Length: 358
Ligand SMILES: *Cc1c(COP(=O)(O)O)cnc(C)c1O
Image (cartoon, rainbow, N blue to C red; front, side, top):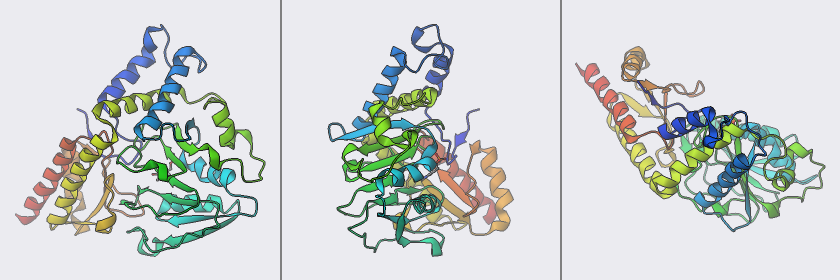
């Protein structure tokens, strides 16, 4: 039986993406070849790459606005250092908002390249909220933030206004909600949270912000090289790109981001209402900063953990354990998770309440 997959990543994908991906492994486009054995320079794969890059910009409303979409290697973690490498001037500085483990990882890498100013941090409260009152230095080379904090279940709802380039790690909420994506100059995301399988990283950037650092940048780490080579500087991860394209096509068929956002909000509303109503559970994130992708919650009494864990596992739920730094539970409700799966979880939480009351 197919599980209700709440994994924080790699994520659930639509059934039709799994089916079409499986088909392409056996016979890609009736070519008599598997997608795993074709040349990345073949006409068929070049078409996949071009469509994927175009569809990313179309879905985000960034067509014709000077943006490039790239499919790269190395995960969001490599972007932690590619961003400063490509954007921080020699003797320059960068500004970072510290909202969680991943933001902190990005900050640590930036420090290799120059002065890294942390404009605000919620670390002392175990990242249970998004800091709001801070100033971004206008002489920094860029400002970096993390839109959704996968581990702590918080999400930026209102992005700061600034004249300097804005860089955003959107690994765990890209394509999940409507935003004015043109307020960002560079967006990156590891595919495996809400876009596709692990193994490829999406980078969307405005070309005009590049080439200003005065640094020598090695080719594989140089965005300008990847743009010039149309995301094929070296052999790209062919299969994860294809599966990501299938997922983006699925998203477009659903009605795009505006439609999926309504479904994501319905899922999050359903679950948070139960967390708040049910006396045996409590949420960990500040209410106004709650993520619609990753909901983090705890049992009021950890002594009943085994009972609850057995109940949700028996209901076919998978991947509900929280990250070790927060404990408790984390329900990751990425685009492909159906509302019916959230209802199953809510039913189990109510059944748990009844059991405790009896
Ligand atoms: C998972 C995650 C990362 C790390 O992604 P990798 O692709 O594994 O390097 C970075 N940032 C955020 C917000 C994440 O959720």
